Image (cartoon, rainbow, N blue to C red; front, side, top):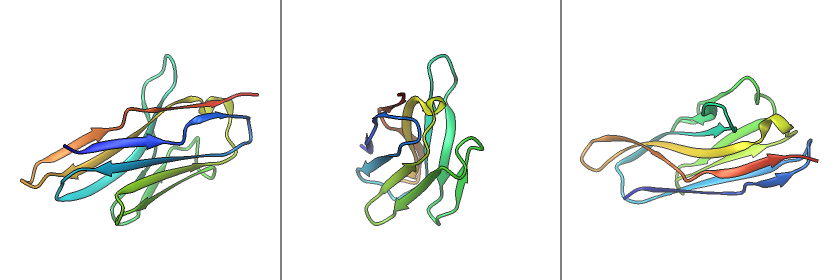
Length: 120
């Protein structure tokens, strides 16, 4: 059973920084796309940043230049460094991973979510 465990959320003042981490554990053939999504109250879940196994990245326009996604393929982890945080970044942040099982099935899995609150 593959599990995603997030850490690093919390309360931060506007202009501050936070780093989110997600560790993927369990048996799988390969770990492919990894990403961070967020969902604010009353809004739909949206993609924040994504990274392929080869290191190609993609960011939402609202976070480009402020957030940086990175991954460690040896440790099966993905991090999201968030700088210059704004109140509108307040949301529950979810780690997402696409992986291939040992029998070749492609699966998408989610973490439990971590709260990020940006407020003075």
